[in-house]
Amino acid sequence: MASTTEERPPGQRPEELEAPAAGRSWAGVRALLVRLHFYAGVFVAPFLVVAALTGLAYTVTPQLDHLVYGDQLRVEHVGDEPRPLAEQIAAARAAQPEGVLASVITPAQPEDTTRVVLTVPELGEKQRTVYVDPYTAEVQGELTTWFGSTPLTTWLDDLHRNLHLGEVGRLYSEVAASWLGIIVTVGLVLWLGRSRGRRKKSARGVLLPERGARGVRRTRSLHGATGVWISLGLLFLSATGLTWSHHAGERFGTLMDAVKGHAPALDPVLPGAQPEGEGGGEHAEHAGHDVAEHGARTDPADFDTALAVARQAGLGGTVTVTPPTDAASAWVVAQGDNVWPVHYDQVAVDTTNAKVTSHSRWADYPLLAKLSKLGVQGHMGVLFGVVNQILLALIALSLIAVTLWGYRMWWQRRPTRQGSAARLGRAPERSAWRRIPLPVLVLGIPLTVLLGWALPLLGITLLAFLVGDSVTGLVRRGRAR
Image (cartoon, rainbow, N blue to C red; front, side, top):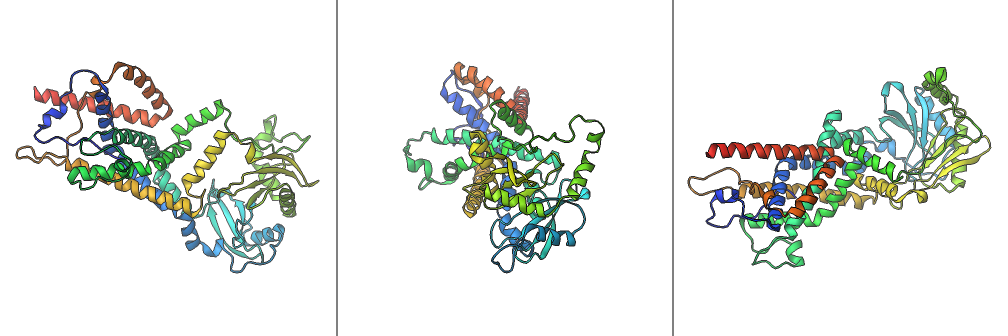
């Protein structure tokens, strides 16, 4: 919800909006929230609109991928039984001999292709993926991917996260996510706590626009009622978006460390073996070379062995089979079913004796780790399939509408009397903090500081708002004198 303010009563002079009332009361708290909501809506709303538009584009990436890359992602005919992974890998390597075999991802659906992922030094953190028909072992194409994402999905993901501006661009999305929760919370407090003699406080009055309203009252009614409907979704997107942001994400990681909320780690070291690289020295200098050399020596038949052992251990659905990085490490097979009910079990496999040496179960994840993982998948629109995509699209479109209504309110509240015409409405009253009850101030200031520490970009921009507002007030008082 963007800016929202109380409608100026007829006959009230604009100067009266700046005059603080005497005494401390809860009216002062409301006045401060109105001003905070107004300024946050005016200055942060453009970031929210950009995030909503880019997020809206990202929600349809599964359909866009199948439209653009259908020849690589889907098979023409579904066969009875898939060919061995070794045969599919051989076909992929014949078509693309460059790079080191990094992993193999089995099909998620019968009509999907097998993905043979290769590490190519020239691609940096990206990889080359060869798509193979699992029933005929014929190569259907190859793409440069990023953590399994197609080029189109990667491009839209970067657009949403950083506008293709790198680390500097990430600031926009973190500012939007940091302020979104504040704007929504304050807007809910103002909407639920409003008092109008002609409008009863009822469920309909909260959830539906006001009947027969005109002008700014109608706009505010649409703004507030729509904001209530999407408030939970917006708070969810704010919280989950912050978990993998740069600055607030580090704070979240610190919290996870403190409460031991991380997912249990899989031990990839074979029993009785000493991990290569321990002790540093000359071996550590050539670690990257050793990994590449070991990967080049990987026997494709071991992929089938590792997969069979993992299936016997209960890992169903699509899995990623990753070869060991050195002779002391095991094969890792990890589930990747992101649609509810999710499956994220992992096993380490010793292919020499076809045994599981370690496992990590989704059931053993701490609650905070589960919520974080599920939240990310829901934010990306994959947790509940098409339903998840539709909900995110509706929230994004509603957020854009609520923001536009907020700006329209600002324009509708402009003075229109002769001699006082203005393009925009005046901001809510200044110095509302002087009317806030002392207990609220005593509790509110430390909580604001703590919130600014947890969300650094929120703290910095809030401080900038306060400094700018104070300077503006000093300048206006100087002109008045």
